[in-house]
Image (cartoon, rainbow over all chains, first blue to last red):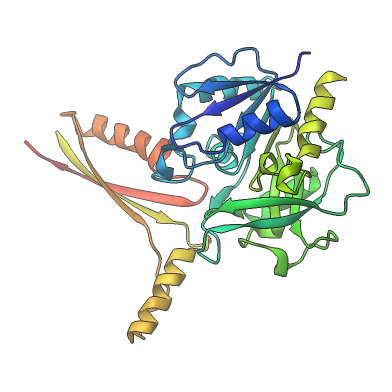
Length: 233
Length: 83
């Protein structure tokens, strides 16, 4: 399969260019923007829903973007096993679209949280995490969100754990998961999850902002390299 | 034509950080007898149908598919006939 990322542009997306830049200029992958009113995924092998404030976050985060024409194509692509990654607002859109389980509520601090966090990788046997080195105790990746407080009922949380769907949890820099390092009140410190089939992933932190060495952090590369490696091999 | 009024409430089992914060504000104001503040949404719109059953069906669809997220919210609505 050829490797090509399709970055969806919704009205209000603001990390679309960051994602394009990191994938194209830093990692040298083929990338194309996909306009929300189109339905053609332009032969992309990976769909990326970027961060931002699609449709002004009106009603609920991601609620309106979920009904964009492009999303119908993304949903059928995902249901056929296509690889989809949602970052921040993209994660919220995947939750609203039902491609990932659970909901996102306001940060328990009620503050917009914008800082570097550390993420413990809970499952290295996924499309999105296979290249994350065992030596990496925790990935250092920034967050920037007001509604990143992941909520699911007890049954769903049990299911997520049983199926190993929890991919990343907020931790300290040594990978210890505790309340102190939970930036938003997410249950079980959940920062990123995959669907049951393992082809759809959502995460609140921004790996595309942690790729260019000039920015002083490159851990985000490991996530994109995992996806690329899966497709190319 | 009907005028619809939709009330969307967060499920009791789901934390409402906004409600908690607003209640803190009330305490700062010296309003001290307030408990369990929960913030929901009130949405109004017109339904361009003459049959009440059809209008209810339409509003139900709008509420369940878009206006509320059934995982965390419940909705109720009333329809008032207007000319």
